[in-house]
Length: 80
Image (cartoon, rainbow, N blue to C red; front, side):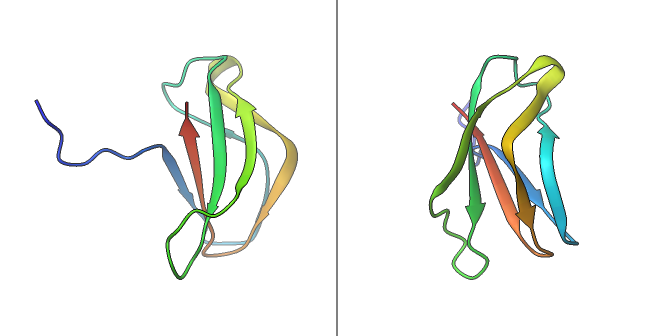
């Protein structure tokens, strides 16, 4: 079956300012690499790579440095 649409990864949208030291990815096996991008609010483009990380036990991803997000920011985590 051909899918009409498939997300390339996990999208996180934030309603308030936060500091993100770690996050959880459902159904992603430990040891898999993930690239983290911040999506531009106006254009929807994903500019530079923020980090490349490895999924840990239970699907948890610990970031090398916490990411500061503002209300309205969008992060994209793409498993490789």
